[in-house]
Length: 383
Image 1 (tube, rainbow, N blue to C red):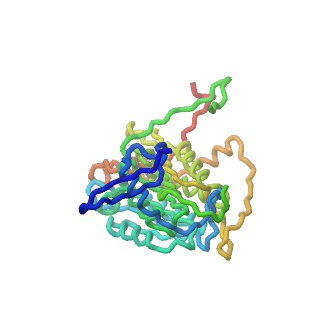
Image 2: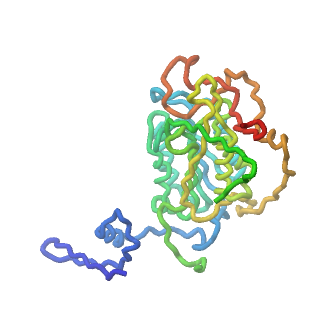
Image 3: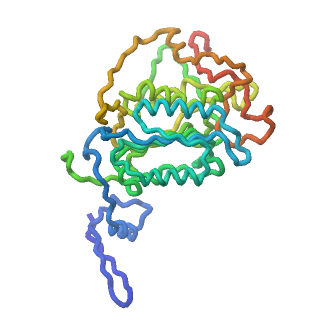
């Protein structure tokens, strides 16, 4: 441990002495100078009400209310070159239904301009969330790396969560802040890799008391789930909605009341990665492409959306276990029923901004296909 530092500053012919507390050089970030550390040490930390014990494994989800869930749904745009996102209203309605079942107070906003979206985020951050478990925000739109589109312009994606840090929104300090983003993160496509089973080889896998006050980082307790890996397309079916939101709604509907949230997110990622593949035979560069969500988490505890009783406290659900399906029945349970529309009426398109402005009957987002298909390799017929 280094000795305490004394800094001397001359100001108006008088000496100002400031004594810092001892600093362990192992704890100082490479990018900050000792002077910046001095300023940080002089700045008193923000104080917020402690909603959960320091060493608790789970977030406190026993407040009176689950919390606000805000859905920003963008279908139509005034930005040149951005096509309408057909199918996004299906995503909006499905997610609203599922989140309502999980006891969220859901608000939906369609096609907001940037100013209106920014104003809503600011007002939400100023609300009193003391009686709420958490906050959830979902955004469905076009996107490019690190930016998302409102109706009239793009904005940095971190605008969505910067207002809810512990210092900016103290009544959400120590509570989960959850974000689901359905938007492209680039223009690359994922061709995927076929995994086959070979004979002879299997799958390879390489306290303090609760009442004690404690300090947390201002950006702790965040979960951001993006529909696609940075730099890649995010795919959307014009009839059934995006692959990501379809999978999110299915997983939350089935597991939301009894599985931990990150475990559910893993299931969502697996469903998107394995159950969907683009089918655009007349455009080889977009055919048979894959997608995988991208997750960033600073959560420090487990999140459960257990059902709430009339008193506002969570209760344990009654879980029914179905008999596992086998063989072809198991495969059928994963395949979506065939569309009643003709192939020319249903399309899968990427949520990107690279499509040119062309007549409706020639638009690049009007790619003919029936539905997302599963990527299945039969070891008996595959060479």
